[in-house]
Image 1 (cartoon, rainbow, N blue to C red):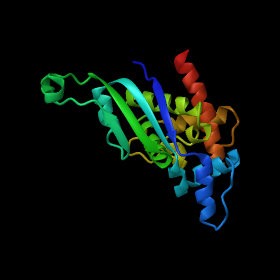
Image 2: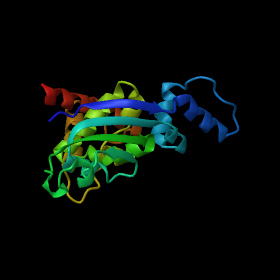
Image 3: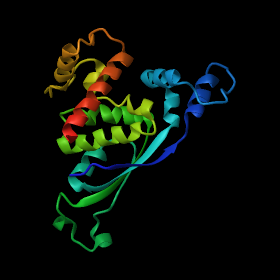
Length: 207
């Protein structure tokens, strides 16, 4: 199964985010794009101006049963209809793996919240595959945003699930093998280490 993500559009920009932040403390507009340090800090803090930026993307040929997982989240999504009066095919005759075109449109806060769930190994491998491919595709145009898309265990510094998937333990084992002091590290440092591990895991999967 292919998980190709097409990033269609970025709405809003970082200068807008910075200006909205500055307006809350009575400062004039910045007049330029803010630094990478600012971007990383505001994304970790999850202050409301990050919602100025929205990402629109497309997944083609997504099996219908996987679209059901994604439409549960609270942002805009557009999926080809299965209505019989539109397709000419009785809906009950359509298979669960019928290919769909899925278009999503979500702001940065939505992405952070959604990817916490969909990068978890409690998500189905197929659904997680789309989440991982999106993270990689987004990194090409918005690396700072892509780098805060982490599973819930990395986000919270421990697994909150009733039934653990083991991802947090795998990540911690890798950190220990690399002599990386993950325990007690800052949130940003924890994210940086996870993203390094994520890239290695993706490279191995594709090999």
